[in-house]
Length: 155
Length: 340
Image (cartoon, rainbow over all chains, first blue to last red; front, side, top):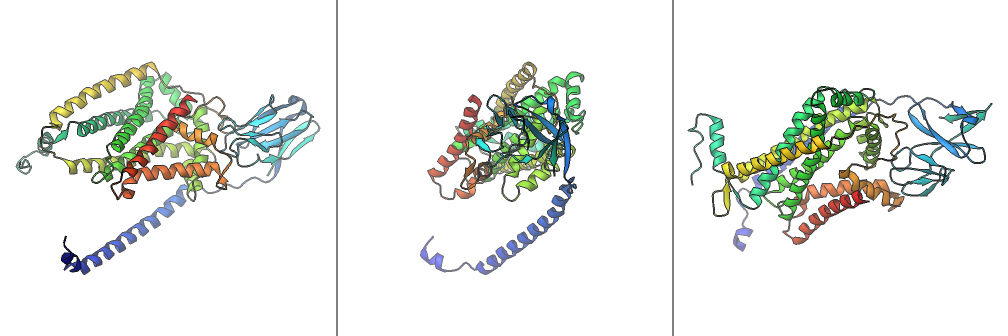
C-alpha cells in the first residue's frame, strides 16, 4: 500500500464506522438481555437458606467411654465434630472440618495432634495450626461434662 | 479443478460422500489430526452409548445411588463390562484429547486460521476432565463423598463467583440430596451440550479448511485416511475392551457426609497435580489463603491457554514457548504427583 492510498479515506469509511457502532450496540443489548434472563435462572438454582437451629447441647457419650488421650468424630446434624479426651482428663471439641478445604480431620494420639489427610494440615490439641496449608485454627465448640455425660454445645 | 456439482446430485448423502471423497489431507499433520479425531470420536460414542445404558438403572439420591450402581455391576447382564467401558473410555478420552491439544501446540496450530479450533480443543480437554470427575461422584461411594466436599470447597475459592458455583453444584454448602441430581445434570446434560457446541465449531472449522487438493505430500480422506482411521479404531476398541475386562473400576461402599474421611484415598490422576500444589503451599501467599491463590491461578492458566490465539498477535516464538511450558508443567506435575 502506498502513502497516497493511506491518506485518502475510503469512500465508505463513515458508513462502516456507523455499522460498527450499530453492531456494538446490538451486541451489547443482546448480551445485556441475555444476562438479565440468566439472573433469575441462577437465583432459581440457588436453594433458599434453611433456618439454622439455635444454641443447644448434644450428648455425645459418657465420660468413661472415652479413653484418655483419644478422640472420636460424631455427626451432629450433618456436621462432623471431633470430641477430644485430653491426657489430663479434660474434654475439648472442634468442628472436624479442616480450615483449608473442609476435609474431615482425625486425632493422632501418638503425636497428640489433629491431622488432615487431604493436604497434610496439622493442628495442636488447642486447635491451632502447627503445620501445613490451613490458614486458620479449627473452630472450637464448648464442652460441658454433667453427671458423667459429655455434652457439646453448638450455636 | 472444479468442485463437484452438488445441485446435480439428487441425494444429499451421495453429494456429501462425493465431496468427502474429494478432500485430501497432508500425510504429516493432516493425517495425525484425522487419526486423533477419529479415536476421540470413537471414545465419545462409547461414552454416550454406555452412559445411556448406565442411566437406565441409576437413582440419583444419596441413599440409593451407591446401591443402584452396585446393582448394575452385580446383577445386570454385562453390567460390570458396561460400567468398566464407561470408566476406561473416560480416562482414555482425557489422554487422547490432551495429546491432540499438545500436538496442536507443538505444531503451532493455535495460529490463524486455527484459533477457533484451538479454543474448542482446549475446552474439550477441560470438559473431558470435568466429565470424568463428575462421573466419579455419581456412585456416591466414600470416595465420591470426599471428592464432592473437596471439589466444592475448591470451587468456592474462586474470587466473586466461587460460593455461587458451589451453591449451584451442590444445592447447599455441603453435599446433600440435591447434589446428586445436579451433578447428574452436569454430567449427562450441561457438559455434553457444551461439548457438542465445541465439536460443532470443530466441524465448521474442518469444513472451512476442506477440500485440500491432491498433491505429492497428501492422501485422500476417503478411502486412504479413513481406512487408516478404521484400523486404528479397531486396535483402540480391542485395547479398551481388554482393559475394561481385566481391570474393572473399584466401587467403594457409601459413607456418611459428616464422617467421610479422606484417609487412605488418593486423588484422581488427572487432578493429582492440583492436590500436589495445594499440599506444598504455605498457609498464605501474597497475603491471601494459598488455596484461593492457587485455584485462581489454575483457572486463569487454563483460560489463558484456551484464549491464547487472542494474545498471540505477533507471530513470536515466545508465545509457543509459553504454551509448551504450561503444558509441560501440567504433564510434569501430574507425573510427579503420581510418583509421590
